[in-house]
Image (cartoon, rainbow, N blue to C red; front, side, top):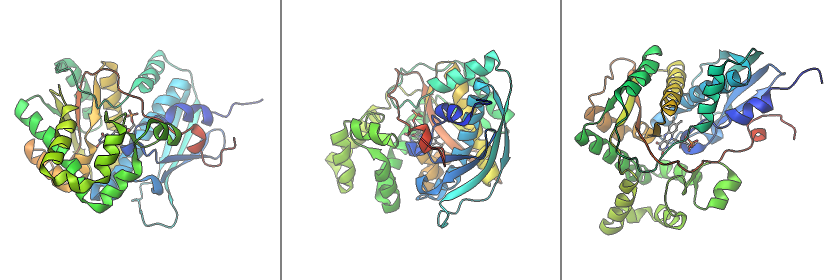
Length: 342
Ligand SMILES: Cc1cc2nc3c(=O)[nH]c(=O)nc-3n(C[C@H](O)[C@H](O)[C@H](O)COP(=O)(O)O)c2cc1C
């Protein structure tokens, strides 16, 4: 063989990028052994909420940073030529082009190898946290990562504000379930049994959400009960119980006015996630607080977010220390590669 096709190797790791609802919408079509076309599969998007559409490009940015991390760890640089068109979820063509990426071989540095290991160890943790504050120097390091990209990382450990934001996140779930389109979207991606989660290898498993599958299925298929005092109260209590030990929340503010901004935002989020991972810190994105307009407003007011012209507080998350969270499955590399032959 004169050369090795790098794509299956790169995708084998890159497919572990995080995506909202674990819908894994990014696809690659290799053109040759250096260049691939990059797509967002609109059928795997989450457009039910108004800000669900910008989050498609945020997810593309998360992927591009993941791809760069993986490629550099395996011995390639990545050049991008991006297409910044808005996504049209009504388009007949279900593959929205994001542009092309080109790999060039280069020597692997120790730093790139370590960063790939961090990428491999990153997970969302929805488990209770242990109430320890993340040290200031770690927060300052994460803020520097955001600063370098023109974003601001802000945090709070004020108990009153933390409690308020955790409640806004919980109330978002209840509000989202009352919206038929958003409810339909969530139901598409919930995986109630371990077998279903493993076989379909995508979506949000009951296990990853720390809920007994049967109970989650019952609660989700009887959403009218959520407004009943006793049952609603029990569900609220169960959900808030997974938030035990949350001492600190963080959010990102910055330019968020079009696809190019959304992509840079997504990249920044991934860099920050890896930076925190390097210090053993876990996080849990509260993306639905951003995509739900009422929740976003309540959040922005609670923290007096800087949302001047073209700027937005576009990501909120809890962060801290927890036991190892369950694994979220991924579809095999072949299902991310268009035109791949087995
Ligand atoms: C942009 C973005 C927004 C997200 N929003 C949420 C959210 O609102 N709630 C949640 O529980 N997880 C959220 N997640 C986490 C994903 O569900 C998670 O990354 C995915 O299920 C894969 O799991 P993993 O991160 O453990 O690999 C978000 C992830 C991303 C990248």
